[in-house]
Amino acid sequence: MDNKTAGEYSNYTFSFKTSVGYTVGDKLEITFPHAFDPFVGNAGQWLLQETGTYYLDCSSTALGLVWCSVDKWKVTVSGGAAVEAANLIDITIKGVSNPTAGTTTQFLRLAVLNSTDVYQVYTANFAANGGVVTTAPATKNIDIHSVTATNNYLFGGSVDYTF
Image 1: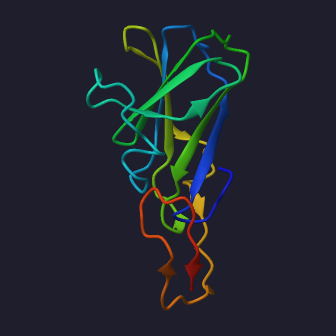
Image 2: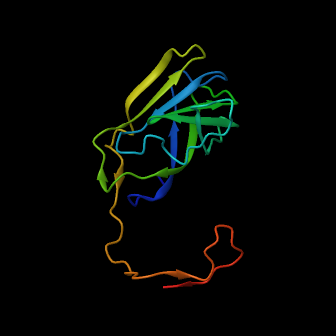
């Protein structure tokens, strides 16, 4: 993760090799611990025809064009390019809200499913060095007693704030 502070948004990058590689039509599943928000990242419904499907902003150098969707801690990744077993696969999931400060007791899990949704590879403790570790936010912040705005309209052109 690129930001380790609890509650902040971070980009999570996964780099790994699998014994079976990846072919177009396969899926990768990354399961986050329950300490995370169930709709990991800034998930949103992009297509009205796909009710109940929530997509994430993600990218991959190895897989080319990727689609990432999430359903209750499970991120499903579909890529546009094949990757052989000897080569590295990278996936970056953007805008993940970090869990509370400390170390999660559950591990991230990773799986490769073929085009008929049969598990080819499954790792129950991805990055086996422990759970996700986050730090507490700064304890000393400026106390704000009041905020007033010169423009309270939602789509206002400019606003001056007085703290």
